[in-house]
View 1 (tube, rainbow, N blue to C red):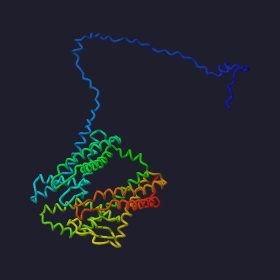
View 2: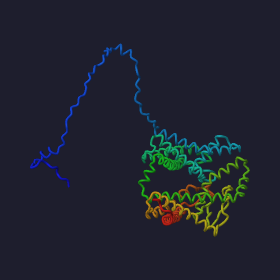
View 3: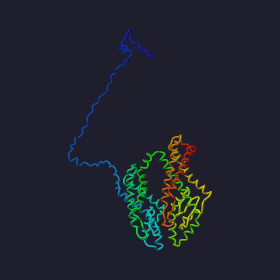
Length: 456
């Protein structure tokens, strides 16, 4: 502990102690020389208007102006242009194929080809065409997929044109989708009026409804992507429901991919019969090319029918017919190369193995669900409620999607025996809900238990 400094003897005055302990320093004066500063003689300049006028002018750079904003297109003009362009791009391939076949075979000129192409374009929207043998309502699903894709692009282009890109507003999305759907419905009505006549009867009201529905579906998908409203809706959707919808769509696509592979394999196995079918048409090269293109256009229908075949319910090729794993009953069929891959009879023991294909597809989708949740979850893994809930909800999502595709892939070919073609949407949807839902839940649970753990 410090001790106080010693002070003067017998003094208790603190000031005296401070004076005794203070260092005494000698003060030394400092002398600095002082210099006188004289101001320079500067001439005085008289500034007047003449002098100012003779001086050079210096241009000072002005402030940069902000770049002008891009002009936004009005919604009606953007909708009309994008929708019409999408319709033209979908109509021209149909008219070109039909026109080529008709021209080379000497069956009418450009007018007849344009009329027939317009009828085929309407058929791609599911609009039945009345003929002398009855209504033709079997849409080429590949053309329908092209139509939906072009409408999707139209929704994306209109969103950018009106300045709603990345806005995240659901209102802009609905506005664009309904605008395109209304415009597309108007185009469908005009096309129906142009085709309606002797030999080809079309209901304009039915065309307006079908065009509106397809326009709304395609444009809504594109507008959701363009405005980024899909991400906004996803953030406000419960996690289990979001996982179920995504897993269900994936399971349905896996089943459809298996159906497409089965269709291609069966047609390849029956390639000799398909070649004989094409050569049986005595219509020249153009006619045979038309038959081949027609079979390709209905190839997507065959993939959906094969998916229903793998699920169990199968499909029909005429009234009273049944094409399923355990039964094959069919009467006389049209001579098309695509039908060369039909099974000759029940599959027997091999059919039981084919029934496992949808189960494997659902389990694979469930396994991928857990892997996806692992990347976004903690080190302990995703909760069981999310894993099992997402797997079970995948069943209804996949069932609804497959049922809608079965409904779109079927239709009549006249009033005779081929009035019923395609799978039953209700049977396929219910069975897919049960099979894919249970298998997806099992696959998700297996991945949660035995799969790789998320990284820390």
